[in-house]
Image 1 (cartoon, rainbow over the protein chains, first blue to last red):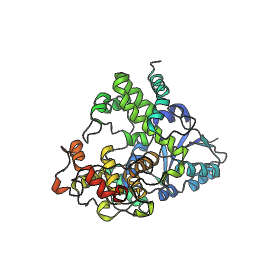
Image 2: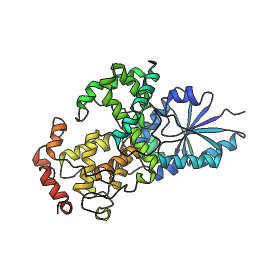
Image 3: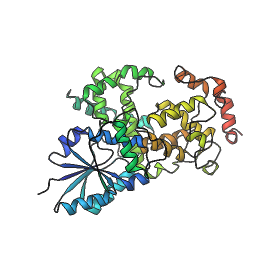
Image 4: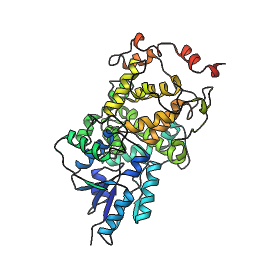
Length: 148
Length: 263
């Protein structure tokens, strides 16, 4: 049986997150998605930064350049019964792309980890937002630090 | 599709591979790697980058004690909660401004989630006396090549194109210049920044451009040469003779840039 596939994207290059919380025992795939790169063009510098972060990870990541939907379909063909997962991106446009591909190829989309809960209703002024989340944000940081 | 290698002789070899493989989807020109290298960072390495007390005092200065970790946050190499926890090691009070800055990123995300169309559409009308159709839709060559009439702005454009990192204050100067001095739609500038910035994040970037433009705020943000000299003068050419468009008082600039509004 193939190990579960963890599909990485440009917002999730965290060693700790992938090793400890979400992807233990998975094999990792990062796709430089030509459809996304065409929609949101970037410089060589940006691609290189992402690439360097990927190869610096202390575990093996398969890196592929191509249409993410086609790459994932090929993975499924090569490994029948393969299951996969991906963390939902923050960027609404990238989220639309990732969730569309995930739905097409049967990859589960996991909710992304959050520092603190956002206010339930839309807040469009920063200090109103800050004052409503400050206490929870500081407490979460202290817990992370092991102070509480 | 193409499987890519995970080992390289050096950074230049990786840049050559990217140029060859990605050629058609990369933005034109600018094919040099950034001096900022992607990597995994330990907590002690992160802690060396964070000086909360100095950050609170100097963050608005071009050479201020900012962490420069934003590209790593943008790509999830490190998360904001971890940075906040490191900052808190020196006490709550010195850490407050640094943590506020981290929360700004979460705020922009909150705004974008509530209004995804606002990533590229005006959230509100301009408060400049002009309507959206009065603004050009493309950046002119002198901005794209860093050859504007103003030396300080050309310096910041070289930062953007050469390193993929621009100090936050300089980002605001560039955005205000593009939108208000040159009367170009904020969307064109936002796309330009997103393509080059290593930390380019659509929510923070685009809504910040909207804030400067006044389509997500109550008034346009502008600056003058005196302000640039105050915050950047020891690093950047801020002489009046090499920055002719910026050398004026706020009153004069407001009247020049927003004549419809003034009348």
